[in-house]
Amino acid sequence: MFVSELARILAPPAEPRAYSYGNAVATMATGWIIGVLLLLLLAALTAQNLFAVPASVGEVGRLTTVLWFGAAMPLIALAVANREQRKLDQRLQIWRSAAHRWQRLYYCARDDIVFLPFSEDPVVRPDKLNDLISASSSEPSR
Image 1: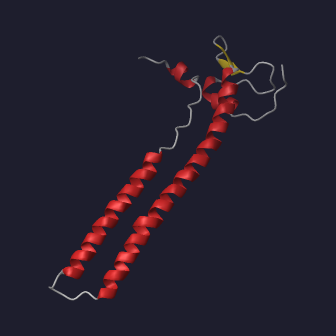
Image 2: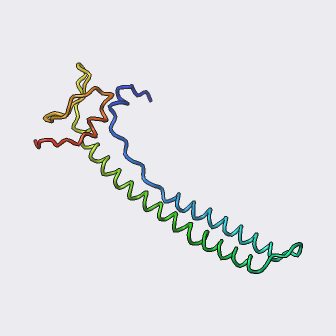
Image 3: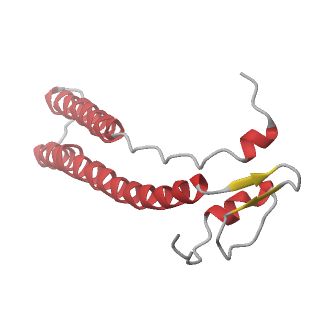
């Protein structure tokens, strides 16, 4: 589908993409897989007879692996997911405001300008549309 350059420039602001909790789940699953592999490796090292592995090393390794991959990584992944969700909430609020302003804009083809009627905001060329959309000046009510 052909979209003109002007249509692309005058397009409404893009809605922020939602954070996928699949990323957090994938991080946790990857951590658990790595943890299981490390536990298997530690079990194989402590069970072999080629060289001596002190029991305390195996215990510390198992404890560290379980704590890191079983608890710390999932908690970190969930914290990141929550932080990204809060950021998304802020971006959505900004986007709603920008989309509302965009819906009230007019384009004059003769003069090749974009403007917001009944506003003290400046008149801008289409390539400066984002400046007009993100303007935070107060507007009189109609």
